[in-house]
Image (tube, rainbow over all chains, first blue to last red):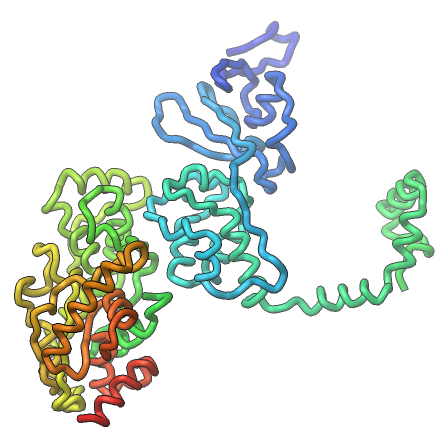
Length: 243
Length: 268
């Protein structure tokens, strides 16, 4: 379909999407997020980085003539003609935040905090819902058989959108479970970063204190000027050098 | 078993290696939850076991393997029932296979599902050679539990009067003692919600065993083992550990079982 007068305007193709039960005509080639903004909606929730990383804009949709429920991120998925769209800006996942020093490298610890993971019937609905293409089921199964390292490895790219938990018939809260497992594995199995420890020591010893004080007391306009100069020359003024 | 009964896995693998089998873990397998085999059929419960069989089948073609073996009676029961599903309940099978088709080629048969006791009992003379009569004279009561015998369609032996573990015990040079409650349920998962059931059942089993004059009880099931150890004073060991001990694979046997068996050898 074309719109406008041939030659006078750029010819654009439009298509129809359905959102909250209403039809909207939007240009072809937009992402779901852009298309909804084109249709006049403003995202006050459920939009973040717009680059496919933050996980704030999970979306569930169906295509005409297909029974499959499809998922994606609104900022990454292109609109298709006849698409039925539902945004899922928030999934209720009550998280247990562990206290410092309480983490244990023990699957029993994870099970105690999130007992529902033992209800996994391995239907794999979670994996089908994952916009990151992960397999939450394999990770949950790994925890059940005591392999926290494997679970952490499998879920490293989780963006905590919560779609898996929404689809889970066992009502497992995957993102908080994976966050907990990641913390345990980070603490007990991952090699410690020497350079990070070194930098923390430097910060604690006050090495950067003066520079930061100077930076914080500089007016914004001056910071902008210094920054723009830095972009051009790659050099900082003497007063902001550490040492 | 991976988490709480790793000694069963360790001793089973050591035993299978000693018998000359090459055992490869299925690249991804899924916990059936232990329930499907034990409860009324409901197709969703067969999703995990049929998926596991699909993965196992694919891998078996690469490896040239022909069987799936497990030392967990619940896994055995569930996988065996799932393996029979295309024939036993084609309608259920089609429904589950249809659901799984999104992910992988559905399992259509081609693997044998075995429990460890079936492998051992098929190799009794080799087991006897490995055992060199180390347990000679020890009176062993075999406690079967449920999952290897019920339902009848997946029983590893005659469910009313099984002999397979007794024959293994004999091959080890030990003396099997028979008693009425060999196949009585220990109470199983009720240990979680209704421990009184398990207490009652295990007491009956324990009285029956006590009157048989056994020195030690051997069971193929980690859950039976757990329940019997928790609620009775019986000396109970897992079958794979006892056979591994007898076959001189001590490094694969847990300290707890070593202690129990050592105390016996002191007495006999």
